[in-house]
Amino acid sequence: MTVELSPDDATDPGLSPLRNFGNEVMLERTRMNMSRVELGRAVACGESLVAKIERGDRVPQREFAEGCDQVFPHGNGRFMRLWRLALRYAYPPWFWPYVALEKKATGLRMFNPVVAPGIVQTRSYATAILKEGRPKGLEDLVTARLERQQILQREEPTGLWLVLHERVLRNVVGSEEIMREQLLRLLQIAETSTHRVQIIRDEGRYRGPVGAAPFVLMSFEEGADVVHVDGFPRGYVLAEQDEVADAEDAYDLLRALAMPLEESAELINSVLKECYS
Image (cartoon, rainbow, N blue to C red):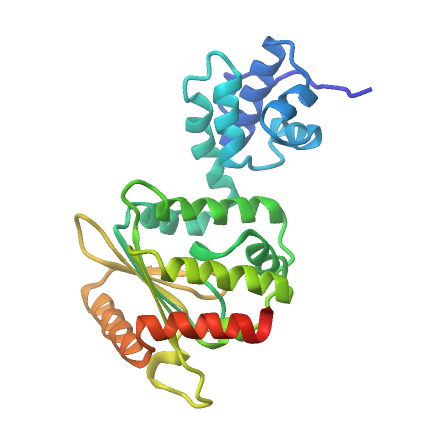
């Protein structure tokens, strides 16, 4: 027999956004005399996941929130609004400013010499990458990372320009099947009219800023560009005009060193067939 705890007091100001989301789900579900099994069936997930979400132990996926707004008669978009707040709990606090900027950006120019950036990672690739750090809440981190990709799918998508080193294509993350899926994803991005993908060939020698840390230049409809640089244990944002100008010069050089767009796509396809078919 499953024991269900009573919902927390929804007026408690100490509830986190994540716990508040779960509490609202439990309130609506019990109001409708619906079991967790029934709710899970309605929103395409298991009973155990519903229980974890109600306890505030898991960050729900977008589809769960959308499903709740459809299942509960008085949802009226409330669960999507609560979900956007709850999602913040899946990110480290230091990463919140970057996510907010990324969501507002009209253009992203990214460089990575080692792995595919999170903004284009498949679920299995993201899981394999994040798992290496043995984090707490792995599934929540994956959910949050994939949610960031919504900016590439909205009605007016953020324009993406990727410059990647060839090692990104050949460094096996997880398994050959995971790599096959990820390279197909890169090809899809490369063939989308609003996005660009360029590859820097691995010629076995140092070339200009190729040894630089991963970074992204973010452009906006209003306001100056900013730069985010990946680092350990955390990344950081640069907004000073001189620093942004240096990053733009570095990115221009990287694009000049990279293969043309069509040749880059051909290389991705070639590595896909050679290594992961």
